[in-house]
Image (tube, rainbow, N blue to C red; front, side, top):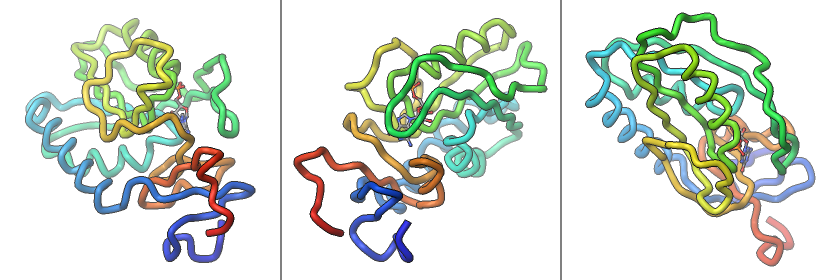
Amino acid sequence: MQADPYSGPGIQIHDLKFVPLITEEAVQARVKALGEALTGRFSQQNPLFISILSGAFVFASDLIRAFKGDCEIGFVKLSSYRGTASTGAIQTVMGLEKDLKDRHIIVVEDIVDTGRTLHYFLDQLEQHAPASICTVAFLRKPEAAQFSVPVDYVGFDIEDQFVVGYGLDYEGLGRNLPGIYQLPKTEDQPASI
Ligand code: 5GP
């Protein structure tokens, strides 16, 4: 990453240049609104937020603070993604230690791309007989959908381009960016930033 990625119009991460897509202000306003919507629905239910690691940890940490009421949080780690293209198989690398039976679960996902990850995880969750399952994705790429998965709350629908920031990385970097940056389509790739 360049020395001060926040100062210019775009950023360089490893070999790729990214352009701004969603500002920090827009991110924060949307997360606050999602927190309010979840508060309206779950504030009396002590919901269990489940954050899918690694990408969703930033979103989840802001989302639970925008939620007003008792709640708990747990983490699962699934793996499938390499570089900028999704691969097939999903694995649970780290599972949940909490008892999910009769709990109201709020699944927190960073981005729904093909929908494979969420589809896999919802299948697993249902086997634990929770009281209800609600899904929240910060980003969704409707054009990339291959699996039909219910997403109850979406931060932003975006086009089918690779993005970084707000928890999402490219080869390990970019998770700490407070806004979202997008890989431009080949014809839009800037000569320099
Ligand atoms: P899916 O299983 O829906 O195809 O992909 C879900 C996972 O792939 C996300 O949780 C995220 O880790 C990763 N992913 C999908 N699209 C992107 C993207 O544009 N940028 C980054 N950094 N990760 C992505």
